[in-house]
Every structure is written in C-alpha cells, then in structure tokens.
Amino acid sequence: MGYDVSETQKLLMLPGPTNVPPRVSRAMLKPLIGHRGPEFKQLHSDVLEKTKRVFETKGDVFILTSSGTGATECALQNTVDDGDKVVVTENGFFSERLTEAIRAYGGSPIVLRAPWGRTPKIDDFKKILKDNPDTKVLAVVYNETSTGATIRCLKELGELCARQDLLLMVDAISILGGDELPVDRWNVDVCVTASQKCLMCPPGLAFVSVSSKAWDKIQKKKTRRSYYFDLPMWKKYREEGFTPFTPSVPLFYALNEACDMILEEGLPRRFERHKVCAQAVYDSTEAMGLGIYAEKESRSYTVATIESPPGIDEGKVRELVRTKYGISLGGSLGEAKGKVFRVGVMGNVGSPEIMTTISAIGSATAELGFKVRISDGLEAARLTLARLPGRVN
Ligand SMILES: Cc1ncc(COP(=O)(O)O)c(C=O)c1O
Image 1 (cartoon, rainbow, N blue to C red):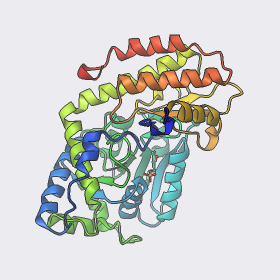
Image 2: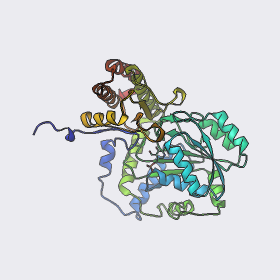
Image 3: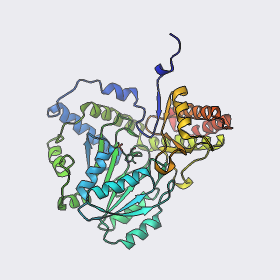
Image 4: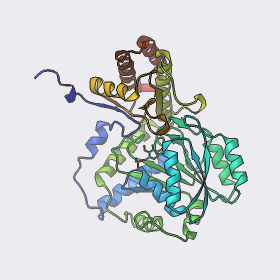
C-alpha cells in the first residue's frame, strides 16, 4: 500500500477542540476508579488545587462534566434571579448566545453591542452601567471566538464592578490558560471555561469559579431552574471531597496531567508563547497578502480570524487545507459566514504547528487562484517566532 493521507497524524488548528498532547492522552489510559472512593477524592483534591492555580484564584472552582455551555448555564442559574438586569456584550456569535442564555434563565439582558470584529471599550461600559444603575450582573465574552476579538479592558471592568453591588461574569471558554486572566486580581466573580481549548484536554469538562461576593448573591437567590447545576449542592458534596453526580474520571486524569504541563511551563511563559504564535499568524497573514478580520487593538492571542481571498469561499480554503495537508481550521459563523476562516492558537502550539499551518494556508489559497506571497509569509512567521520564550522554538 502506498502513501495514504488519511493515515497521517492530523493537526487540529481549530478554535477548539485542540491537539491533546500525548502525555495527556496517556494519562487517560489509567484504570478507571469509582467516583465515591478515596482514590477519586485524592484526584479531585489534586486537580482542584492545580486548576485554582491556573485560574489564579483562592476562591471556589467547580469542575462539571459537560461542555462549556453547561458552565455558562451553571453560572447564570445560580446568580441571575427572575427579572435581574444583566448588561451583556454582543459582538459575535457566542456573545449573542450568552444573551439568549440570560433570557432563558429569567434575566433581563441590556445589550452593549459592538460590530463583529470589534469590542466595546471601557467608556461604552461606563456609560451603559451609568444609564442602568440597577444592573445586577455584567456578563462578557472575554474572547469572542467567532471573530477573534478580545476585550482588553477586563481588568478595568473588574475594578468597576468591585466598587459596586455588581457581579462580573466572564465567559473565558476560548482563552483561559492561553492569555492573562488572574481571576482574583482582576475581581472576576464568576469565570467559566472548558477543557477542550487552551487547557488542551478532550472536550467534556467545564469549569466555573465563584468569588465570595458571588456566593453572597447565590445564597440569597430566590428562583432555582436547574437541579444538575445547583452550586450550593455542588459545594456541599465538594466539602466531602466529591461531586454530586458521576464525573468523567478519564477526563479528570487528563486534566491533572494537562495542569501539570501548564504549571511546569509557568503561566507568564505560556501566555507569551500564545501571544508570539498568534502574532506570527497575523504577521504572516499580512505578508502573504491576506486580511485580518478583527480590529488591531482587540486581536486575540488564542484565535486568529483570517479573511478569505476575494471571491474565494472560505469553506474551499479549509477543505483543501484539511484534505491535502491534514490540518483542520475553524469555519465562519453568523455575520462572518463564508468570509473568514479561523486558526486556533491554543494549548500545545509552537513553531512546528504555526509554520506548517501557514504554509498550508499559503499553498491552498495559491491553488485556488489567489496571488499569494507564500515565501514572504513564511519569512515573517520565522522572524516573529524567533521571539518565542525558551525551548519551544
Ligand atoms: C466563547 C465561547 N463560549 C461558549 C462556547 C460554547 O462552548 P461548548 O461548545 O463547549 O458548549 C464556545 C465554544 O466554542 C466559545 O468559544
């Protein structure tokens, strides 16, 4: 049998799920244990301690067996009472979903919009909060995965909320572990994320952190709409060392190993690596003659959104990149449909992944008839990647 591309190791450059390092995959092969016994109790306690270090919080973190949206539902169900005003940003597909979820949980969303590819700025937040002094929760998608735009004033938002009777709820699903988010220092009351992105685990675990200010609100909450995600029940079980419902033990093994890798690298170095890799994607994209969708000051370091060449559907670029070069890229959503494709720069990503992806994008767009400057793109990436911290280059 000759060469078979389907047998080639695939590279997931998606904005989730991301490549799971072999070390993390191997951890999942350990024999299964019961989730009500002493071994799980120890594993749970170890994993929680490490996860809190990744969240940079001394507050509570709960690990749910669900996708990221489960953590969002958990956050909302526990903190938003019927009729509560929730100021929510809308600048892409996932923030629009957040508004829908707020409504589903009885909240009254006050929408702060920004065009797709941009983010609301601190003065926009100040104004909407001033106009709505009875707001109970400020909910933001820190990194809008559909557009590759990051809200860069999150720290200031935390300061604003800390001074008022206002909770800051952050969807950090596509960014936590890849860019700065010191939960306690930035006064984030409720932070949600998921396992399959910068935490480089398979999908299936979701996380929610809870500050003491958020607990005060949770304890006073009148309406309860979910049994599975009821945090006071989770807290009660956690005090005994367990979860109220069956956890995905193999994913806990994976997370334990992934947290070790993250903490061995160190958060500052890890964030710098993501930033340099994302910058290499941006620099090479521009050098090749392609456009970037997100405004410059909001460009994400975990997902780069690239405009498809004029007249070429982004789906065709991705299909060629996947079938011919074995690399999966993210497609376009909502308003950006057909126009952009997305490169996930999440988790275990360094020079090999970035250079391979850039050359595949260059080759695919050339084959589709675009006059692309591949060698300029590779050179730009090489120069930027030379700034990578330590071992990874
Ligand atoms: C910012 C953001 N929020 C929410 C979600 C939904 O997460 P999940 O599909 O894990 O439920 C995603 C998924 O990509 C996301 O990027």
